[in-house]
Image (cartoon, rainbow, N blue to C red; front, side, top):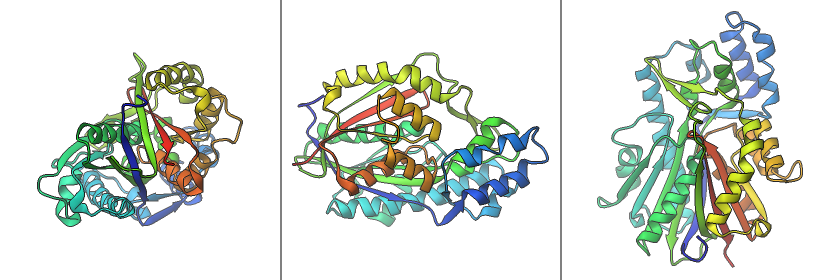
Length: 352
């Protein structure tokens, strides 16, 4: 709530893996993998052209994805890629906050695309130089909402222990869920949409930073478990898209966001910009309608989607990073939706 949360956002940093996958190459690969086996594939293949994506980044060379892969192989790729991205994003965020890894008191790790026990921050702790007494808070299952909700968790932890420094890292390796064995519309859409990436933020109270975190809220709609998520089997993760998301956004987001803004005591008219998770071009258009924005308002969202695809949790923080670089407005509200089906929101007031 406004006036109760004294935490500040000190930095935002992003990282992507080394393999850039142009969308035309992804379409060619998908045609070779699915074209002869999927009924009406030619009609479905148009999704590669309508996503608004020009390229994505993935953790493995292209031919790795064309082979039959089992669960252990996918998890090895997840661990290797996620650790590298965690280190890259965290290093940049810590440096941008004028800190050292030794200064970090709490680490919030957000990831839903693989299983790591010990969790990622423990696996990279020695390489990054974290203290032995750093508090570890791994968060799993938030999906695309993880960037916003993870930052909210970091803010509340910083407020709970004033003066401590909290690092939040969201890292997702969505590409390990590309499946040769699932001849479904959802799998084709996932193959056309998802990429890999990471984002990190540093949060602390009693500091001016980039912006004050004014408050955060969540809304979970009942009986919506089938909208989005992972289906887990012997081969790996399989995407769940059992309902069309853009119509849901159009119908449900406005009232839910109104309730969340009221909880944060934020007047809708005082918001200079919404910063949203760009789930896809149709989702972005639905967000603009639901939020009563002019078409084209979510320009950074479209550009991030074009350059990186949907990276799940980190994506909205890529948008925020671009917004900061171009000039953060006085008040921006972050919003992202993910499995649950849940919307997370967080309000930022530019430091003055």
